[in-house]
Amino acid sequence: MRIRDETYWQWADAQLHCRTHNEALSDGTTIDVQVRLSRLGATQLFLGLYRQDGQALLEEYYPARPGETMTRALVWGVDRARALATGALPMPRQRRRA
Image 1 (cartoon, rainbow, N blue to C red):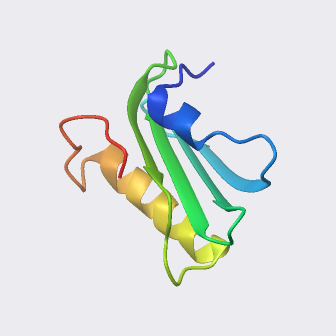
Image 2: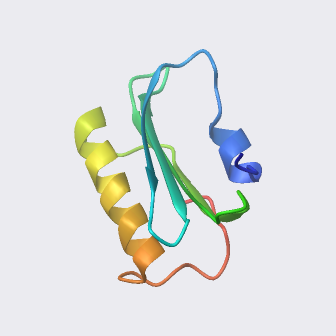
């Protein structure tokens, strides 16, 4: 079970349909990437990295991905989450709203 931080709850809206990518890495880290269209038609993205015990390592919420389709934004988010989880990109020092 994931323990969600404030960033997720800022993102959450049960009335909006979203597409989701969940993945478990070999070290037990899990990736949760979600993409949706806002009520105004903006492509929005959430990505979360969680330890094996469910504790959030990082959550990011992008309120707009201008010029990107949901599919393109989802691919970008999965790539970013994998790179952060594996150390290919440095982990931001603080959990943040992007």
